[in-house]
Image 1 (cartoon, rainbow, N blue to C red):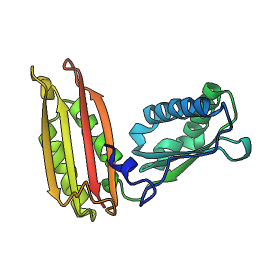
Image 2 (image 1 turned 135 degrees about the vertical axis):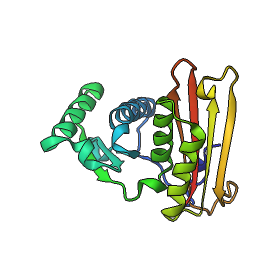
Image 3 (image 1 turned 45 degrees about the vertical axis):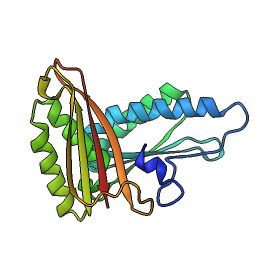
Image 4 (image 1 turned 45 degrees about the horizontal axis):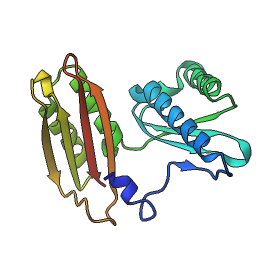
Length: 201
């Protein structure tokens, strides 16, 4: 179960803000999925945390929260203009793209998961990566963090799962402000490796 989806309406909210008329929902949903996949691929190096999509009065607004806004925007705004044009060409309509700075990257489950996945892709040890980012999260003020790494870890012939926990991570307490993310990466020569991160803020 996705820990964020479980808390929607309690201390989490939707990342798509729009209302669809009859017959439009499926088109809007597929459009959102395409936009999210594309933006994640383009801004993962900038420390992407979340993507909010809004559709007020026929407009399309995409807001991306990143840890490194300067990297996302590019020199003299070239990066954001290129990304905006690519999204517009993909969906066939004008897009208002906004880049928002995310406060503390060490408390974002998606950013932490992406950093661990990037390290695994460079053949670094998952255990050392997990311990490093868990320590950073706790120093940043987290009450607890849990990391699972699954797959043919470091090219091992059999798939397995490594679990690391520090502090308190109460998955079944809905009032807890728990951030969750699942990130996958392609380990060289050993298929897909998944990284799951839970952070108790």
